[in-house]
Amino acid sequence: MKFEIEIITPTLIKSQNSAYPFEIFRGKDGKLLLIDSFRILELISDIQSKNSKNAEINEPADFNDFKAVIDKLLEFKKNAQSNDRIEYMKDLEDEMNKFYNKYSDIIGDALILDKIDDLMQNDESYLRTFEIFYPINYGGGNNSVYLPGSSVKGSLISALFHRYKREWQCNNKIEFLYGHRDKSIDSSLRDIGSLIQVDDFIPKGEIKLGLIKIQRESIKRGKQNKKGIFQYIIAITSGKFVGDISFNWQNYDRIINRIKKDYNHGKDENDFLEILKCGLKIGSLNPRNRNEMENLVIKGLVNLSRDYMIEAKRKIDEYKLIMDLDIRTNFTIGAYRGALLMGIDKYFRSPPETIFKFENKILGQVKLEVIQG
Image (cartoon, rainbow, N blue to C red):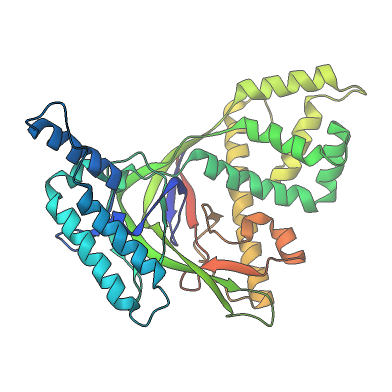
């Protein structure tokens, strides 16, 4: 079953790497680029090695150019609280531009992301932070950014977790089948999670990125608007992604065979189906009609996510928390998405005291809808 994800608010599935300020460079067209500076040094080394007349002594690169950038960065960090901070930032940008302009002909071979919009206020600078998080990608520009299937699946299963935690009828059915109170929900979620296979979601058309500042804010009642630390991220600000969500029948058969073999007292396939029906609020499931069951389970998970987003918006309005949920969204994914997927029930019983937001919106709000199947 093919689904489409549309970005509603800035979304970030973080790469394992992070960028440093000197790796963000403003190109000739005014757009920001994310460059692998060490790859540039490798390319410089290759060029100099080929041009070297002395085969025994090949200088690795002209490190003086690169060192000038690093020295300015360290000077800036050391004097970050100085009244001359703006001048330090300007000097550092000048050194960056000198370095990258000198080697502009090889920048394309070291490009990680391109066409990044600077969405921050005019009086802000991305040079105020030492590292900048950017989206997971496989290299080669904006269209190499993708949404990992594991992140999408995690959000789907999180909605089911919230449902199970608060529905005593579901809890009773789960405990009857798995037989241990403390671990029964975890066991059921592992089994159900193994039934859902989610492929990576890849770009559909143009994907836009933006360099934004996010700030930690207090959301504790009576302390709203209290500001905390800020970070800079390169987030996906708009675009659509497509991917497949399917049902793993091989794992289903394995689970049913295990239930019949390992559990006594007459427990069977129907007991597992009762857990699925209760969790997904489905009236009936017929494993003999596999196409229909796959359709009901997958769409049931998506609808469950939508239900919990609607509930979250109602609770946010009720508690007058300074947060905003877009009415078009039925899903949240990615880093910095806020407190919602910690567990909506847990969140409103003992909510965290702080949250990251951008322009009063929770990050990672997306619209998930089926487009085929």
